[in-house]
Image (cartoon, rainbow, N blue to C red):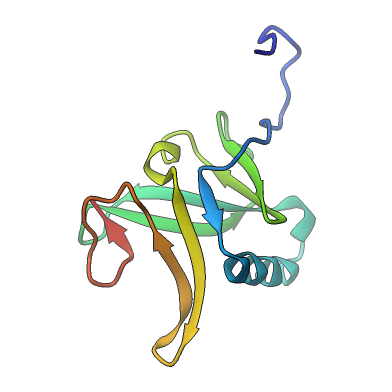
Length: 124
């Protein structure tokens, strides 16, 4: 284990992430990130927040902030950040990009969810 008395750093260490991205999800996120003005300074932030019809909802967005105790990972070339509170809820989660006749969007498979709503945007 590293010495915690070393000089503080503004960036959290990169670790194996709590989430996985399928190839199609990683490709889509990289495509969307490339459209952003400051694409080199942003990460995909994945969070769990109170709300939704099942009690907790997912939030995926681009973020240039570095919060204390973020879990930082490079997942298939995508910089990913997960806050300390969300990390346990998301461990083992796989995010996919689905493009079908019913529509296109990210699909989240979370093995920690006991139940989810019909739309798949929230869980318990």
